[in-house]
Length: 165
Image (cartoon, rainbow, N blue to C red; front, side, top):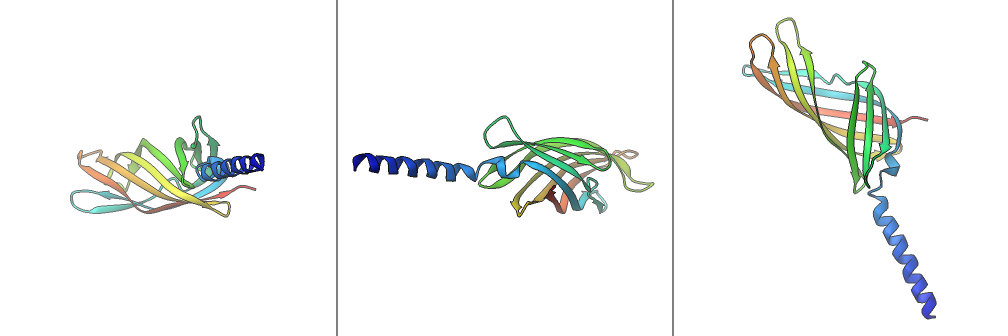
């Protein structure tokens, strides 16, 4: 009887440990996805705010297990040829993408052109083989000709990534 009680406690302990660590496991996110992004980035200039569509519209996204527990590496390849290597983690079942900062030339029209320094982060969940990410963009825009500086913020930016068959 004593042995069966100890066995039951051990089995319960192992199962409890598995269930508590499974929600922090990146395993459910690992795979190849096709993604599509939508939303706008708002550039706040001194005179007015300018809305610019998200440029990284669609492409392929590969999520791989990272070096540490709960960590993931994300390769995002857009159809325009841009490739980004992102890192993130899975915690409480949620995918959180770490800050990624990059520079990009932005041509709004023939009058306003410049360079943006953009920081990207995201968080989201997996539902039925689809990841829904709330994208967050922030940073600064410097107008080429005048040197005027504006702020960058996201406005309802979202990425939907569907697991490839």
